[in-house]
Amino acid sequence: MAYEIGKVEIWKAFLEAVRAKSHEALSADLRLALLEVVMSWTSDYLQDITAQVVEIYSTRTAHLSNREGAQVRETLDNFIAGDIDVAHAEKLLGYSIASCAHVAFVVATAPDLPAGRLDAAVSHVASMLGGPFLALALGARSALVWVTVREGSWTAFGSRLPSRPPEGAMVALSSEQYGAVGFRRVREEALSAAPLLEANPSASPLCFPDVEAETLALQDHQAARRLVHRQLGALLHQWPAGLDLIQTVQVFLETGASPTRTARQLHLHPNTVTQRLKKFEKVRGRPTEVGDLPLWLALKLAPMVRLDHAADDF
Image (tube, rainbow, N blue to C red; front, side, top):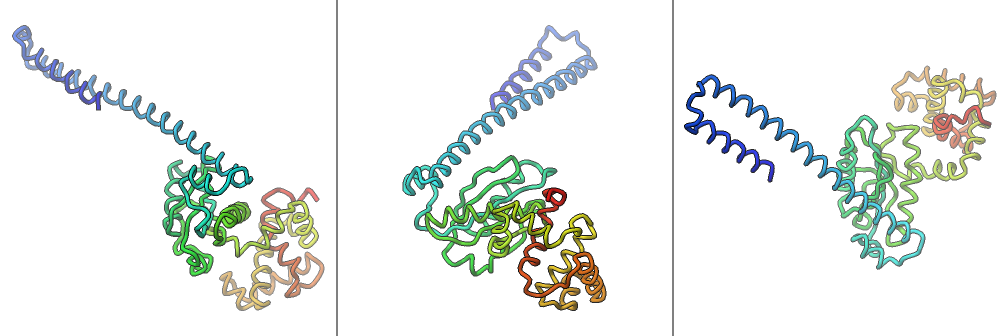
Protein backbone atom coordinates (compact mmCIF):
# COMPACT_ATOMS: atom_id res chain seq x y z
CA MET A 1 0.00 0.00 0.00
CA ALA A 2 1.06 3.61 -0.61
CA TYR A 3 1.57 4.49 3.06
CA GLU A 4 3.86 1.44 3.51
CA ILE A 5 6.03 2.74 0.67
CA GLY A 6 6.04 6.17 2.30
CA LYS A 7 7.15 4.67 5.61
CA VAL A 8 10.07 2.87 3.94
CA GLU A 9 11.19 6.00 2.11
CA ILE A 10 11.09 8.04 5.33
CA TRP A 11 13.31 5.47 7.02
CA LYS A 12 15.76 5.44 4.11
CA ALA A 13 16.08 9.22 4.13
CA PHE A 14 16.56 9.34 7.90
CA LEU A 15 19.22 6.60 7.97
CA GLU A 16 21.14 8.24 5.14
CA ALA A 17 21.10 11.54 7.05
CA VAL A 18 22.32 9.90 10.25
CA ARG A 19 25.18 8.21 8.39
CA ALA A 20 26.21 11.38 6.56
CA LYS A 21 29.52 13.06 7.51
CA SER A 22 27.70 16.15 8.71
CA HIS A 23 26.45 14.12 11.67
CA GLU A 24 29.80 12.63 12.70
CA ALA A 25 29.71 14.74 15.85
CA LEU A 26 26.66 12.82 17.09
CA SER A 27 27.48 10.35 19.81
CA ALA A 28 26.36 6.72 19.60
CA ASP A 29 23.91 7.28 22.48
CA LEU A 30 22.37 10.28 20.76
CA ARG A 31 22.03 8.40 17.49
CA LEU A 32 20.30 5.57 19.36
CA ALA A 33 17.93 8.06 21.00
CA LEU A 34 17.16 9.58 17.60
CA LEU A 35 16.41 6.14 16.22
CA GLU A 36 13.99 5.45 19.07
CA VAL A 37 12.19 8.76 18.55
CA VAL A 38 11.86 8.26 14.81
CA MET A 39 10.68 4.68 15.29
CA SER A 40 7.98 5.97 17.62
CA TRP A 41 6.95 8.68 15.17
CA THR A 42 6.87 6.19 12.30
CA SER A 43 4.78 3.76 14.32
CA ASP A 44 2.31 6.53 15.20
CA TYR A 45 2.19 7.56 11.56
CA LEU A 46 1.48 4.01 10.45
CA GLN A 47 -1.28 3.50 13.02
CA ASP A 48 -2.91 6.83 12.21
CA ILE A 49 -2.88 6.35 8.45
CA THR A 50 -4.13 2.77 8.84
CA ALA A 51 -7.06 3.96 10.95
CA GLN A 52 -7.90 6.58 8.32
CA VAL A 53 -7.76 4.04 5.50
CA VAL A 54 -9.96 1.60 7.42
CA GLU A 55 -12.50 4.34 8.15
CA ILE A 56 -12.62 5.44 4.51
CA TYR A 57 -12.91 1.83 3.31
CA SER A 58 -15.68 1.04 5.80
CA THR A 59 -17.62 4.15 4.82
CA ARG A 60 -17.37 3.37 1.11
CA THR A 61 -18.22 -0.29 1.63
CA ALA A 62 -21.25 0.57 3.76
CA HIS A 63 -22.38 3.07 1.13
CA LEU A 64 -22.09 0.50 -1.66
CA SER A 65 -23.76 -2.17 0.48
CA ASN A 66 -26.64 0.14 1.38
CA ARG A 67 -27.08 1.14 -2.26
CA GLU A 68 -27.07 -2.51 -3.35
CA GLY A 69 -29.47 -3.41 -0.53
CA ALA A 70 -31.82 -0.61 -1.56
CA GLN A 71 -31.83 -1.90 -5.14
CA VAL A 72 -32.60 -5.44 -3.98
CA ARG A 73 -35.37 -4.19 -1.70
CA GLU A 74 -36.93 -2.09 -4.47
CA THR A 75 -36.83 -5.02 -6.91
CA LEU A 76 -38.35 -7.41 -4.38
CA ASP A 77 -41.06 -4.93 -3.40
CA ASN A 78 -41.98 -4.43 -7.05
CA PHE A 79 -42.02 -8.17 -7.75
CA ILE A 80 -44.06 -9.05 -4.65
CA ALA A 81 -46.55 -6.33 -5.59
CA GLY A 82 -46.75 -7.65 -9.17
CA ASP A 83 -45.31 -4.50 -10.74
CA ILE A 84 -42.54 -6.39 -12.58
CA ASP A 85 -42.62 -9.88 -14.09
CA VAL A 86 -40.59 -12.83 -12.88
CA ALA A 87 -38.09 -12.75 -15.76
CA HIS A 88 -37.24 -9.10 -15.08
CA ALA A 89 -36.95 -9.76 -11.35
CA GLU A 90 -34.62 -12.73 -11.92
CA LYS A 91 -32.39 -10.59 -14.14
CA LEU A 92 -32.18 -7.75 -11.62
CA LEU A 93 -31.67 -10.03 -8.61
CA GLY A 94 -29.40 -12.62 -10.21
CA TYR A 95 -31.52 -15.30 -8.55
CA SER A 96 -33.69 -18.03 -10.11
CA ILE A 97 -37.32 -17.81 -9.05
CA ALA A 98 -39.70 -19.43 -11.55
CA SER A 99 -38.10 -22.85 -12.00
CA CYS A 100 -36.89 -23.60 -8.46
CA ALA A 101 -38.13 -24.73 -5.08
CA HIS A 102 -37.59 -22.22 -2.28
CA VAL A 103 -37.28 -22.10 1.49
CA ALA A 104 -37.15 -18.74 3.27
CA PHE A 105 -35.93 -17.95 6.75
CA VAL A 106 -35.65 -14.96 9.04
CA VAL A 107 -32.48 -14.85 11.12
CA ALA A 108 -31.84 -12.44 13.99
CA THR A 109 -28.76 -12.08 16.17
CA ALA A 110 -28.52 -11.00 19.79
CA PRO A 111 -27.80 -7.28 20.44
CA ASP A 112 -24.58 -8.05 22.32
CA LEU A 113 -22.99 -9.87 19.36
CA PRO A 114 -20.75 -8.16 16.77
CA ALA A 115 -22.64 -6.79 13.77
CA GLY A 116 -20.72 -9.11 11.42
CA ARG A 117 -22.24 -12.15 13.12
CA LEU A 118 -25.47 -11.66 11.14
CA ASP A 119 -23.68 -12.27 7.82
CA ALA A 120 -22.04 -15.37 9.25
CA ALA A 121 -25.40 -16.68 10.50
CA VAL A 122 -27.04 -16.07 7.10
CA SER A 123 -24.28 -17.97 5.29
CA HIS A 124 -24.28 -20.78 7.85
CA VAL A 125 -28.02 -21.48 7.68
CA ALA A 126 -28.15 -21.06 3.89
CA SER A 127 -25.30 -23.55 3.49
CA MET A 128 -27.21 -26.11 5.58
CA LEU A 129 -30.14 -25.81 3.17
CA GLY A 130 -27.71 -26.26 0.33
CA GLY A 131 -28.42 -23.84 -2.53
CA PRO A 132 -27.89 -20.29 -3.81
CA PHE A 133 -29.46 -17.68 -1.58
CA LEU A 134 -30.80 -14.14 -1.72
CA ALA A 135 -30.67 -12.01 1.45
CA LEU A 136 -32.54 -8.85 2.35
CA ALA A 137 -31.68 -6.90 5.51
CA LEU A 138 -34.66 -6.27 7.78
CA GLY A 139 -32.61 -4.26 10.27
CA ALA A 140 -29.11 -4.00 11.67
CA ARG A 141 -29.37 -7.46 13.24
CA SER A 142 -31.96 -9.35 11.20
CA ALA A 143 -32.42 -10.51 7.62
CA LEU A 144 -34.90 -12.32 5.39
CA VAL A 145 -33.26 -14.95 3.21
CA TRP A 146 -34.52 -17.07 0.30
CA VAL A 147 -32.66 -20.30 -0.49
CA THR A 148 -32.99 -22.44 -3.60
CA VAL A 149 -33.38 -26.09 -2.58
CA ARG A 150 -33.72 -29.36 -4.44
CA GLU A 151 -37.44 -30.04 -4.76
CA GLY A 152 -38.59 -32.36 -2.00
CA SER A 153 -35.37 -32.12 0.02
CA TRP A 154 -36.87 -29.92 2.75
CA THR A 155 -39.54 -32.51 3.41
CA ALA A 156 -36.76 -35.03 3.97
CA PHE A 157 -35.52 -32.90 6.86
CA GLY A 158 -38.92 -33.21 8.51
CA SER A 159 -39.11 -29.40 8.63
CA ARG A 160 -35.91 -29.27 10.66
CA LEU A 161 -32.42 -27.99 10.07
CA PRO A 162 -29.79 -30.76 10.10
CA SER A 163 -27.91 -28.93 12.87
CA ARG A 164 -28.25 -25.99 15.23
CA PRO A 165 -27.89 -22.38 14.03
CA PRO A 166 -24.81 -20.43 15.20
CA GLU A 167 -24.61 -19.34 18.83
CA GLY A 168 -26.71 -16.24 19.46
CA ALA A 169 -28.74 -16.54 16.24
CA MET A 170 -32.50 -17.16 16.17
CA VAL A 171 -34.00 -18.66 13.02
CA ALA A 172 -37.60 -18.95 11.79
CA LEU A 173 -38.11 -20.99 8.63
CA SER A 174 -40.86 -21.46 6.05
CA SER A 175 -42.06 -24.63 4.40
CA GLU A 176 -40.78 -25.56 0.93
CA GLN A 177 -42.68 -24.00 -1.98
CA TYR A 178 -42.13 -24.00 -5.75
CA GLY A 179 -41.83 -21.26 -8.36
CA ALA A 180 -42.85 -17.61 -8.31
CA VAL A 181 -45.96 -18.21 -6.21
CA GLY A 182 -43.88 -20.26 -3.78
CA PHE A 183 -41.25 -17.51 -3.62
CA ARG A 184 -43.90 -15.09 -2.37
CA ARG A 185 -45.48 -17.65 -0.06
CA VAL A 186 -42.29 -18.66 1.77
CA ARG A 187 -41.62 -14.99 2.45
CA GLU A 188 -45.01 -14.67 4.15
CA GLU A 189 -44.46 -17.86 6.15
CA ALA A 190 -41.01 -16.91 7.45
CA LEU A 191 -42.15 -13.40 8.38
CA SER A 192 -45.25 -14.82 10.10
CA ALA A 193 -43.23 -17.30 12.15
CA ALA A 194 -40.47 -14.89 13.19
CA PRO A 195 -42.46 -12.95 15.85
CA LEU A 196 -43.03 -16.18 17.78
CA LEU A 197 -39.30 -16.32 18.55
CA GLU A 198 -39.54 -13.08 20.54
CA ALA A 199 -41.69 -14.87 23.08
CA ASN A 200 -39.67 -18.09 23.04
CA PRO A 201 -36.08 -17.66 21.77
CA SER A 202 -35.22 -21.20 22.85
CA ALA A 203 -37.63 -22.53 20.18
CA SER A 204 -35.09 -21.62 17.48
CA PRO A 205 -34.93 -23.00 14.86
CA LEU A 206 -38.68 -22.61 14.53
CA CYS A 207 -40.50 -23.89 11.44
CA PHE A 208 -43.73 -22.49 10.01
CA PRO A 209 -45.44 -25.90 9.55
CA ASP A 210 -45.12 -26.44 13.31
CA VAL A 211 -46.62 -23.07 14.29
CA GLU A 212 -49.13 -22.47 11.52
CA ALA A 213 -52.08 -22.37 13.91
CA GLU A 214 -50.42 -19.70 16.05
CA THR A 215 -49.51 -17.56 13.04
CA LEU A 216 -53.08 -17.76 11.76
CA ALA A 217 -54.39 -16.66 15.14
CA LEU A 218 -51.98 -13.73 15.27
CA GLN A 219 -53.19 -12.35 11.95
CA ASP A 220 -55.94 -10.76 14.05
CA HIS A 221 -53.91 -9.74 17.06
CA GLN A 222 -56.78 -8.21 19.02
CA ALA A 223 -58.90 -11.34 18.56
CA ALA A 224 -55.96 -13.48 19.69
CA ARG A 225 -55.57 -11.35 22.83
CA ARG A 226 -59.24 -11.70 23.65
CA LEU A 227 -59.06 -15.47 23.17
CA VAL A 228 -56.08 -15.78 25.53
CA HIS A 229 -57.69 -13.57 28.16
CA ARG A 230 -61.01 -15.42 27.92
CA GLN A 231 -59.36 -18.84 28.32
CA LEU A 232 -56.60 -18.05 30.83
CA GLY A 233 -57.70 -14.89 32.63
CA ALA A 234 -55.90 -14.41 35.95
CA LEU A 235 -53.05 -16.74 34.97
CA LEU A 236 -51.68 -13.95 32.76
CA HIS A 237 -51.12 -11.82 35.85
CA GLN A 238 -49.32 -14.56 37.79
CA TRP A 239 -45.92 -14.36 36.06
CA PRO A 240 -43.66 -16.36 36.03
CA ALA A 241 -45.63 -18.92 38.09
CA GLY A 242 -48.50 -18.68 35.62
CA LEU A 243 -46.13 -19.47 32.76
CA ASP A 244 -45.04 -22.71 34.47
CA LEU A 245 -48.67 -23.79 34.77
CA ILE A 246 -49.44 -22.80 31.18
CA GLN A 247 -46.45 -24.67 29.74
CA THR A 248 -47.19 -27.76 31.84
CA VAL A 249 -50.83 -27.93 30.76
CA GLN A 250 -49.88 -27.34 27.13
CA VAL A 251 -47.53 -30.33 27.16
CA PHE A 252 -50.13 -32.33 29.12
CA LEU A 253 -52.68 -31.82 26.33
CA GLU A 254 -50.15 -32.52 23.58
CA THR A 255 -49.07 -35.81 25.19
CA GLY A 256 -52.59 -37.21 25.39
CA ALA A 257 -53.27 -36.10 28.99
CA SER A 258 -50.52 -38.31 30.36
CA PRO A 259 -48.85 -37.02 33.57
CA THR A 260 -46.02 -39.53 33.06
CA ARG A 261 -45.19 -38.43 29.51
CA THR A 262 -45.58 -34.78 30.50
CA ALA A 263 -43.21 -35.25 33.44
CA ARG A 264 -40.67 -36.99 31.23
CA GLN A 265 -40.73 -34.23 28.62
CA LEU A 266 -40.48 -31.41 31.19
CA HIS A 267 -38.07 -33.26 33.50
CA LEU A 268 -40.54 -33.14 36.39
CA HIS A 269 -42.00 -35.66 38.82
CA PRO A 270 -45.46 -36.91 37.75
CA ASN A 271 -46.89 -35.68 41.06
CA THR A 272 -45.66 -32.17 40.23
CA VAL A 273 -47.51 -32.34 36.93
CA THR A 274 -50.70 -33.42 38.69
CA GLN A 275 -50.38 -30.64 41.26
CA ARG A 276 -49.86 -28.01 38.55
CA LEU A 277 -52.87 -29.29 36.63
CA LYS A 278 -55.08 -29.02 39.73
CA LYS A 279 -53.83 -25.49 40.43
CA PHE A 280 -54.42 -24.52 36.79
CA GLU A 281 -58.00 -25.79 36.93
CA LYS A 282 -58.61 -24.03 40.24
CA VAL A 283 -57.49 -20.67 38.86
CA ARG A 284 -59.54 -21.15 35.67
CA GLY A 285 -62.55 -22.48 37.56
CA ARG A 286 -63.20 -25.33 35.13
CA PRO A 287 -61.78 -28.74 34.20
CA THR A 288 -59.16 -29.27 31.50
CA GLU A 289 -60.36 -31.41 28.61
CA VAL A 290 -58.30 -33.04 25.88
CA GLY A 291 -59.43 -31.76 22.48
CA ASP A 292 -60.28 -28.27 23.76
CA LEU A 293 -58.89 -26.40 20.74
CA PRO A 294 -59.53 -22.84 22.02
CA LEU A 295 -57.70 -23.68 25.25
CA TRP A 296 -54.78 -25.29 23.43
CA LEU A 297 -54.45 -22.29 21.12
CA ALA A 298 -54.63 -19.87 24.06
CA LEU A 299 -51.87 -21.80 25.82
CA LYS A 300 -49.68 -21.49 22.72
CA LEU A 301 -50.37 -17.77 22.32
CA ALA A 302 -50.09 -16.78 25.98
CA PRO A 303 -46.32 -16.00 26.03
CA MET A 304 -46.74 -13.64 23.06
CA VAL A 305 -49.68 -11.85 24.65
CA ARG A 306 -47.67 -11.45 27.84
CA LEU A 307 -44.62 -10.25 25.90
CA ASP A 308 -46.77 -7.65 24.21
CA HIS A 309 -47.88 -6.34 27.64
CA ALA A 310 -51.46 -6.98 26.61
CA ALA A 311 -52.70 -8.77 29.70
CA ASP A 312 -53.93 -5.51 31.27
CA ASP A 313 -55.50 -4.11 28.10
CA PHE A 314 -58.59 -6.27 27.68
